[in-house]
Length: 97
Image 1 (cartoon, rainbow, N blue to C red):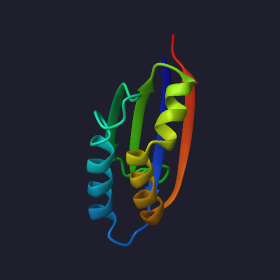
Image 2: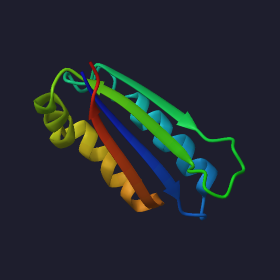
Image 3: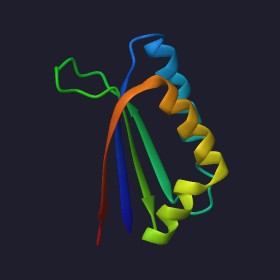
């Protein structure tokens, strides 16, 4: 199993509304992208300085399935929106036994 985690820091302008929209768009990928086995989208409540605003944890059967997700048209629509409202992001990909 492949786990793909992304943490997002949103721009301040319309931050809350953009976070809500991104969360909904990401959750809608379940069922729309065949290779996506699961997705968990979380909005942060921590007030620590190092905290990020939103996270996704996704799972795939293989690296090839993750690659298929990365270029899927529905995922690319979400990526376009997120790129316009996010200051930066971090990613971790790993294999889970």
